[in-house]
Image 1 (cartoon, rainbow, N blue to C red):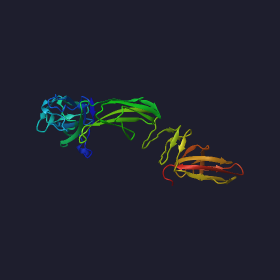
Image 2: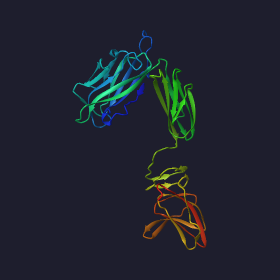
Image 3: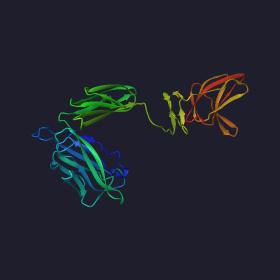
Length: 385
């Protein structure tokens, strides 16, 4: 069985989009073009259209038309529409062939009928005599529908069904193993005929594998879906078949647009914020076991020489990380304001460890006697004010 995903014109206005969802399956998988010899028997195929309403609000439907191109050209699916046996699974609905329009018309016995989320049904076209030329045939499903008291509108969806050479095959696309540790290797294998070109697509790569039936891939660090694409037929109207297989990586690398942490973020490995804007407000961040790379955000701060009993203070003007590089004959503490002119010590920063600090907190460097010095780096989050 072949599953053909629903497609639509990207320029379709939202109000003109179909109110029903469609998915087409074909048998055999994929459809085979009939022999070019007109004396040879035609290949027979079947198309099943599964229809559903995804929204909780029912849609009123006047009719559903399935346009099947028929003739002797490559974009035609059938040779003779009159040989097709149509059927719809809904009660109180009928289906008939409109020969002039080359459409199968499905309609309720009433003027219209509601289709809700619980009313899934199928439209089945059996005994299709498949056209004799390899190529892709557009099958158009058009509904006349509305919600509420709005006017009925025609809303179309187009599916592209391929008719492949009789000896074409692509099957058993597998990834072994299917679960690996981060950085592991896999072997992709498949079975295919020789009368097509083949491409492997994954993680932004597009590799020609026309002359292969296997390919080792090394050092995979994230969950990956591999797509194997076969193309055959005339370049003016080719047919394409795509198989996929999925790989799961244990503890994968992640590449995401944004992340929200509402509780505690613990990092035991390498953490790289290069070029990033980080907002950790309201969260607890623990990088005590992490290597932190914040290149491009270095804001070196140095107390210089501090003489007893004076103290040197530095106020953090935004949220960020503070790393104490060293302290000599000095004590360092991170403090927060508790009232007008009042401060409370939160912690004494350890050397070489990134500490999360908030805007308005301060670093205080003091010396127990004589003189001392401290040096550190502040890596701000967001705008440096």
